[in-house]
Amino acid sequence: MENGILFLNSFLSYLMVVAAFVLVGALGGIIGYQLRKRKDAKKSESEE
Image 1 (cartoon, rainbow, N blue to C red):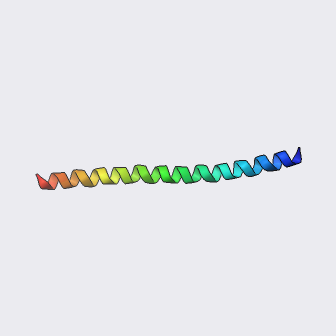
Image 2: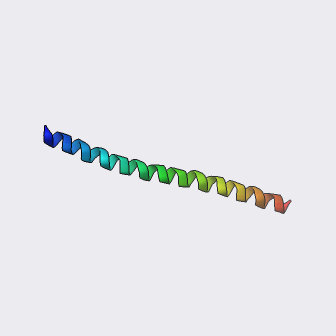
Image 3: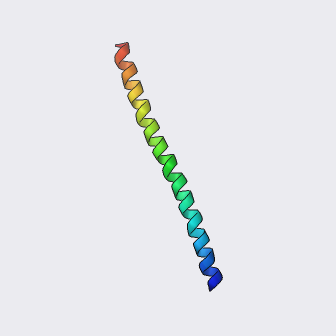
């Protein structure tokens, strides 16, 4: 029983680390997309 609890503890710990990496990656993608959209809008304004 104790081994199962230790395994579950380790598994949840790694799961939280993976979730943190996914969150940081998703936020980076969203911020990058918004910055690119803003840059493209500014560029199209200056071309007109």
